[in-house]
Image (cartoon, rainbow, N blue to C red; front, side):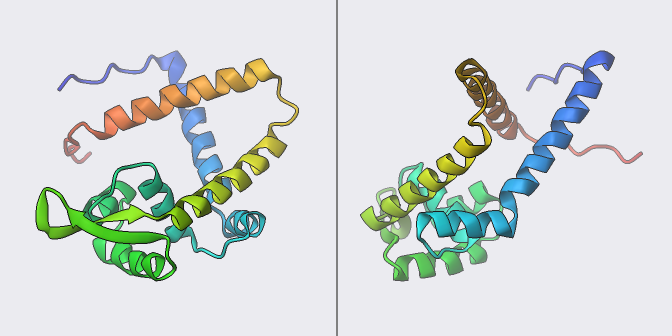
Length: 167
């Protein structure tokens, strides 16, 4: 594992500002009122945890519930409870795990995919409204930078975390 390069003093202010703004965006997009708007626009009635689970399953192959919990950074019991409701509502089904017939994976159904599509479309409309005055080139540049940021976050998340010594 390679050590991260130290941030130059001049860039530290920018990194601090980026962290602050990402935290603010996460807060703004994760608020209950924003979720209610998303559900109203999509015509669905799902809680925030169910939306996160459906999005994660829609973007992957069928997953074991434990793997899903790790990806979402939540307790397995929380995912199990949500999956029961999503299964009851017809959004997911359990399928045998091809690697271990004793285990099961969770797979999204056509109804689940349709729900995720509706949620994404409602989200796109909301973001589109916010960014409607931005020039196309700015949008392309922002999308490219976000892709790079997410890729770097994913790459960094895969690295082992070394305990930091106490100050």
